[in-house]
Image (cartoon, rainbow, N blue to C red; front, side, top):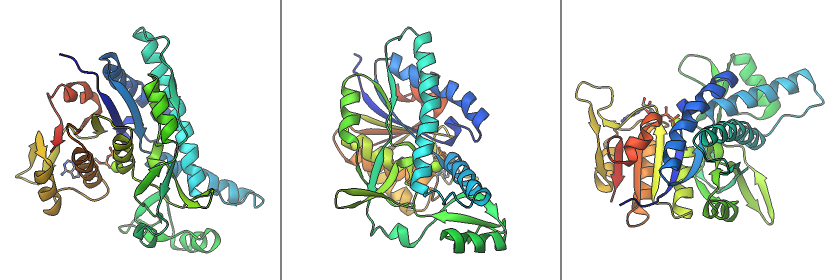
Length: 314
Ligand code: ADP
Ligand code: MG
């Protein structure tokens, strides 16, 4: 028997491409994959990453400042907000078109500019790790650090890059609005790029210079809207142990305790597969029947039918 599921879908980099024209094309197949699930009757909430896009916006805004000294530098939180709108626009547009093709002419798609509160004491602020934007020479890096207060790090002999903090998401500020829209059957895109990082200062939410991991933000969202499933769509069909080695083994089904053991044994790369498996574990632990799935974008439909992907459950 069919049971309607509330599903949070986290879209990875391959769902969006790296440039404006690439994104316009990529969102068409992304929309097809999402509509496959909507057509089945599921309630779908979409979260997306923003690595290349926030880097691009950040660079463009920095170039503006170089060109016109009257334009102060743009805070990173504002660049994240811009990326939410830009990606949300392309996704809304592509989803609308695909829904109409399938006869859903009245299903609205809406992007919520989402702020996500982080802890100002999060140790990630003391240790920025996430590289964003273009490569710089030593001189450019020194200038950027003096003029804009950027933290710059040498990146594997390839030059210098700005690195930013990636604190854990604590609270989704617009949660009530998201819940109401999902309850009312709208297709919601939210927490884009992990959400706009903010810290609480009395009644004021102050933008933080950080980029939140979208895998962790989608997990928090899935827990808070009481989703049945968290699906993380990425560039691999399954999660592997001994990834890239001779004894590589693709996993279909993982219990939370197995997953924790594999995390401890170092099977998942930091910054790519590790946050996904951590997010999946966190969600699977959060309530009876909560299941997480990690798979390829094109395999989302087969994945929820249990035919492929890596399923993580209690
Ligand atoms: P996304 O943009 O979807 O977040 P990432 O590049 O951050 O994608 O993470 C997905 C990548 O993680 C895969 O393409 C793969 O190269 C890499 N990866 C690292 N460790 C593993 C593993 N153990 N199993 C599968 N993929 C892994
Ligand atoms: Mg990633």
